[in-house]
Image (tube, rainbow, N blue to C red; front, side, top):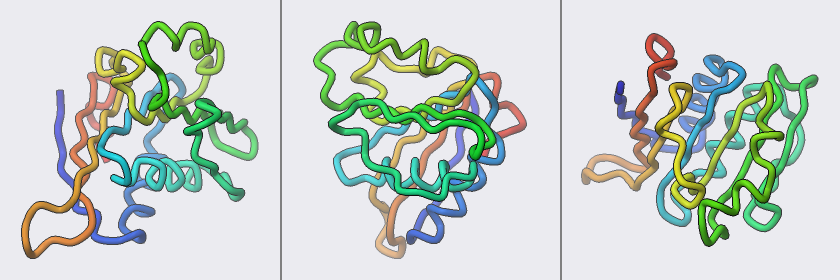
Length: 154
């Protein structure tokens, strides 16, 4: 597994990072976004969607659990899911997630609540955390890519 660390000092940096991820996405990929409440998971998901061509609003899927975005206008269809409210990974099957994912990309917030996706070769797992050093601001993204991300890491 390949790991990178990226400083995201402000929203502009998040947008640039989201664009780098979006440019590298392929059908079947999963971007698994983890971190505490307010870590910036939805903000990064919005940046990725914008880079794929979505110009409208991107509501947080906290209550709907799944939001879908079709191609066109997007380069790829995207499923944006927030699994925070799931009580067990088995609930993912009840949602029919696999049907939504067909031929598209999954942006998964709180992936651990869905059983995780890191076992998938096309998973880019990104953990967002507050900057750790006194001279840093904003957030840090620690990304780990599965085998399919070799040569594509943002």
